[in-house]
Image 1 (cartoon, rainbow, N blue to C red):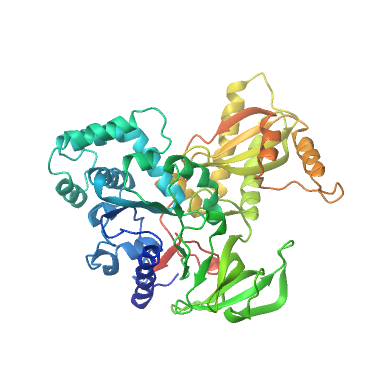
Image 2 (cartoon, helix red, strand yellow):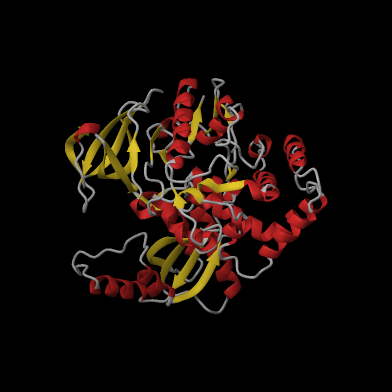
Length: 498
């Protein structure tokens, strides 16, 4: 997505609106700092000499972020050098160390996506002893080797604070980590993360670690453009609505039928013509050159702020699986599975008779789970050979998914190894019986390629006869401009050129 200096001005304008909105609902935000876990990702130079990089990386590396005016509302626990450290593991360690060292100043915590914040909590669970040792000794662990990051963090933890280290260690070693965010940062007023759309699956874990802290989704944005803000930030996640700012881009909306999601032929309306309760696909014309671009987001009009319509994010069109910034469509999944199932041939001619999938976010990081029913069933005489072949099937599915998924797996490690759970014969018949008992038509029933209802997952889970994981990471190279994908949908972590 093209990016310009003027576009960065607009993004900064929107960011500057967020705290004044929060000030209407939360007092005292100028009395401390925010602990935000923010990260940069790889960038390349295109053949024409332009820098291509993820849109958030473009913003964090710009002067708008690095040279922002000093203000109580823009002070973070992490120095810029820790955020801009290109090694994500070093950056994570450094940012958590600064957040713990400045524990008493933290008034709000967060990240861009809920998944990133939960990865930080999981990282903390595995490294709190080393972090406490650093605070106790007034040093930076040797694992932080980036010179600029190390020097900046060393200034934050320049003096030993044994009492602080002991207090943090006592909370982390207490047993249950329920409420750990509130316990480690007792002045925290809310958790600032996106919990709408595919991120809603992380709400239970956030509530477990936050123990009553409000979950705040402040803004609605994508790689194409930033769109709007949440004017009622303390609403429950399921009630969040965004007010679109008309100065960010030009908006149009394609009316969508709620049940079928079929777009009405030629039915396009402007921002002022949408109807409360209606479902629409967002179309934008941006200042950076996108013309009538279909973003792929399905929105519902929930009401108005004065004369400005407010929208609830419903879902991405055609996306069936998502854990982090990955967005896998049913077609993507079908292509990957079709390529992988050829590897089943050595298993006595076994064929894949049915499959479905879901995103398992009960572990951190989450991962894709595919339920496969094979005909005939897996042979039982050579477990080692079966395990080897099924692991290769897992790897082949991953290799067939798109570049964003492969980057999340191989570089970011924000998505765990893909898992195939082989189910016994008749498992998908039982799934159909469940759906029919809930009102589906026998004549029109077809297996969904993505299941989300706990009862449906439980039916298949009860019939699992084998579990297999990918034993490697898929190949990934930094972003490349592909002309035949110029019209593909992007997401809030897509690439932009500036």
